[in-house]
Amino acid sequence: MTSEKFTVEKVLSIQRWADNLFSFTMTRPAHFKFTAGQFARIGIKVDGELVVRAYSVVSSPYDEVLEFFSIVVPDGAFTSRLQHLQVGDELYLEKIPYGFLTLARYQQPLPHDLWLLATGTGLAPFLSMLQDFETWQQYQKIFLVYSVRSQAELAYVEKIKQIHEDFGEGRPDFSFIPVITREPNAPLHERLPVLIANGALEQFAGQAFNPETSHIMLCGNPQMVDDTKEALKQRGLTMNRRGVGNIAVENYW
Ligand code: FAD
Image 1 (cartoon, helix red, strand yellow):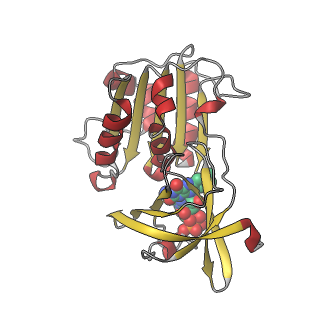
Image 2 (spheres, helix red, strand yellow):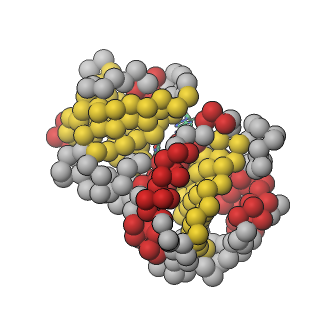
Image 3 (tube, protein in one colour):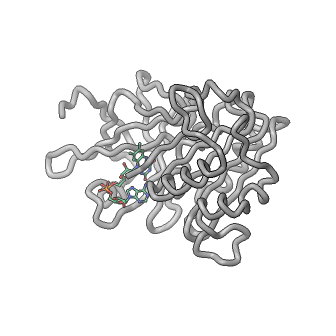
């Protein structure tokens, strides 16, 4: 891999949410333009070799810095090092962004109700979309469904409230719906495909999925993405291909 593909950026801040979760911001070079929902490729040097991983951008396309939300995989080649990141450290950033998990991909149906379904760090691209005024202008209703294992892993809750206030004021209905799978007392605690199959998610949201109006995005754990996709198909929703259809997905591994 040639270093011309990358720029060297500086870490500006770090926020730790739990032992296995943290966020960081870094400098954003002027040339790095992206659409909300896209991902960057970030590199660190390990024994002289560049190790690179995909990371969805959390921050909005209009922010001066780039923010990312990361898991720590104990023996992971990348995150076992990334977790020791300090302010002022250098990271490599590939010059161009990637990815098609963007709202612009939808041509039919026209925007009406938007469902953003994430597991864990799969929340990242949705935070970027929600910090883009266009998202709020386009949709009548927005549902952010965020599935984690424990309360401690429920990151960004205050930020989500703030985003709603800053971007969604006087705008369409917005529901933030946490799902906590290892807490039986949580209002929603089953896996997303189960909550869709048994109707509990729609009941909680006060809105039914509708093949004529719903845009549904899934991001995170590939097992969740696959199973949820199947549960939605059973309800008559279709994969978005060439702009047409309800469901768009991104797998993190
Ligand atoms: P890897 O060797 O890459 O992964 C080892 C194992 O860890 C995987 O097999 C899987 O079981 C588990 N794992 C990997 N990523 C995650 C995760 N995010 N959450 C839970 N378990 C995981 N990761 C982020 O943390 N934040 C992001 O915003 C993000 N965006 C991505 C966007 C895309 C398009 C893709 C393809 C991946 C994204 N990932 C993201 C995953 C990321 O690229 C790395 O896999 C992750 O940083 C772990 O790297 P690693 O080398 O430590 O472990």
